[in-house]
Length: 560
Image (cartoon, rainbow, N blue to C red; front, side, top):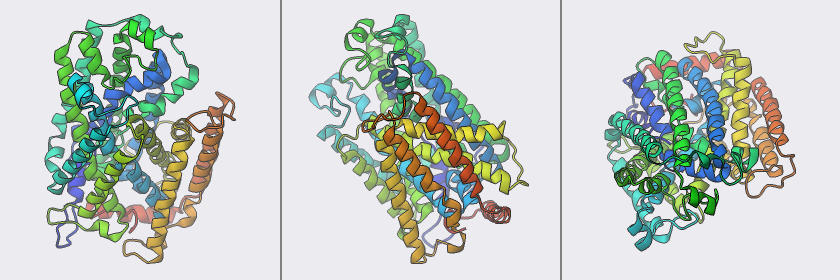
C-alpha cells in the first residue's frame, strides 16, 4: 500500500519550535501526484495479495481482481472530482467536514488514522514473511509461523524495525519523499519483471481450472477474496487528493493522476494473479489444494515460484524488494500517522513539535500503537489486512456522500473534473464501500465501530473542556446523525451475514449482497438530507480554501 503522504507530511510539519504556522508549498506536478498514488497502490499487497486471493477463490481470483478494480475505480472517480474541486491537504477528512461539519469531519479523520496506524506494522510483517522464505532463515531463525503469525524472534525484529522507523522520522523523512519517484519506478519495475519471467519460464493454463473448476468456492469465494488482500492491494489511489493542497495545478492534475494510477495498478495486479496461478507447480497444487498451492508455510510466493522456475537471480531481486518496498512504506507511514494525529490535535499535546518540525509526541504514539499491533496474538499479515481494508472502506464511504451533499449545497463550485452520471455513480460508490465492509466480516466491523466510538468520545471530551482547537459552534452534531444508524446497521448485517469467522449465516446466500446494497442506498439518501445549509457550506469552504492558499497550518478539521 502506500508511500503516499510523505511530501505532505514534510511540508505540513514545517512549523518551528517558536510556533510559526507551517506552510504548504504547491510544488508537486502531475507525475509527482501520479507516483504518489501509484506508489501507494503498489506495496506489500503485490507480494502476498495473489496468494491470499487464490486461497479464497482459486482460479476465479481473476474475477475478484476485476470486481475490485471496478469498485475502486468508481471510488477513485469520486475522489478525483472532490480533489479537483476542493484542492486541500488531507481531503478524506475535510470533504465530510465541508458537507456535514466538524464532528463528521473528525470522525472521518479518526477512521483515516485508524487505517493508517496499522500500515507500518503490516508492512513490517510482509517484509518478514518474505525474508522468512529464505531457506537458512526459515530453518535456523524462523520469523513467521506456519499460520502466518510472527514468531518471538519475528516480533523482536519487527519491534526493532518500528524503532528504527521512529528514529529516522525524528530527523525528518524528507529525503524519502524527495526520492519517491525512484522508489515507485523500482516498485513498478520488479512486479513487471516478475510477470514476464514467470509467464515465459513456467506457465500452466490448466491450473486455472484445477481442484474443482475455475470457481471452486463459488461466488462466496470470489467475494471473500476481496477483503483478504485484493481490495487492500488496490487501495491508496486517494493519496493524490490528500496532497492536492501541495499540487502545482490541482484543478487539472489531481483527477488525471488518480485515474491513471488506478488504471495502471489494476492492470498490474491482474497480470500478477495470472502469472502466479499459471506458474504454480501442477502436482503441488493438486496435492495441497488451494489452501496451500505452493506448499505449507511458504509466505514468499513469487520467491518460491522464481526458484522453481530456475530464476534464482529473480528470487534474489524479490528478497531485496521485500525489504525495500514494505520497509520504505513502513518508514513513511510512521511519519504519516504522526501527522494525522497532529492534524486532529486530540489531545493538544500531540500538536507539539520539536526544533526539526517533527510532531514528536504524535510520532511516539504512532510508533507505540504500531508496536502494539505486532504484539497482538494472531495478528498476521492477513489478519491486519482485513482490519485495514474495512477501516479504509469506511473512510472511502464518506467520499460519495460528501460529494452528493456538496453538489447540492455548494452548487457554484467549479469542478474541473466531474464524475460521470453522478446520480447513479455516487450511491453506487457508497454501496461498493459498504459491500467491502460487509465482506470483511462482522468481527472487523464491530471492532472498528467501537474504535470510532472511542474517537468520538475523545472529541466530546475535548469539546466539553473547551479545548482551544475545537470550535463548538461549528461541530454540527445534527448533521452527523446518520453515522451511527449506518455503522450499527452494518454491524447487524455483518452478524447476520455469511462472511467472517463469527457470522450467524442467517441472511440468504447471494441475496445478502442485495440486502446490504439496499441498506446502503437508504443510508446514502438519509445522510445527504442531513447536509449543512448552502450558506454554511459556502462560508466554510471559502474560509478553508483561502486559509490553504495563504499557506495555512494544520488542517481545520476541528478548528475551522
